[in-house]
Image (cartoon, rainbow, N blue to C red; front, side, top):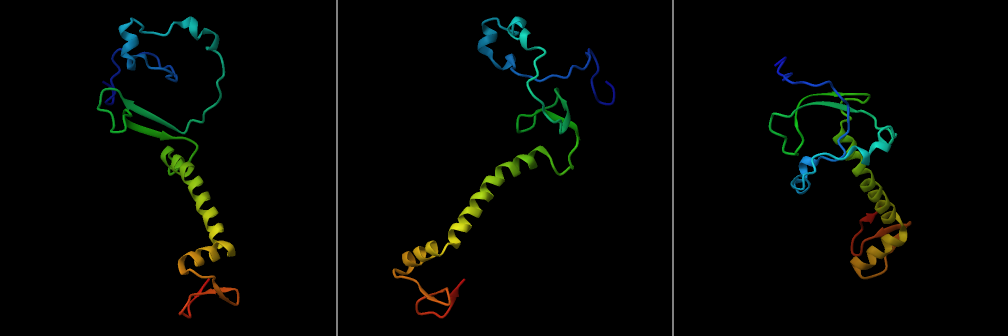
Length: 146
């Protein structure tokens, strides 16, 4: 144990991407399939599948209890090339928020149209809108809608 990290039986670090985890498929394990036969992916070993920007490197513990999200316990993280506030969650949030904000802007533009405002007025008050100086006037009131 060195600095709280178990180094017993350690192997050389091999950066990799887990494509399929067979330990999560008990049906295949019962059939005796413990590994994917190398000949199935041999032609793709040196294939470039694209690029991915490394934004965060997590040092995870395989021994401690996983987080409620199911992700491993994270001992430490290092962020790369982004401000610390630009975490993966922030980026995902902005990605989900943009279409919603676009819809809100579309609705705002639609509500600003005179024909839309007139239709709403007619449905609420049951009559054609009264205007003074291109502004809607509420019936029996002197307030002006802008």
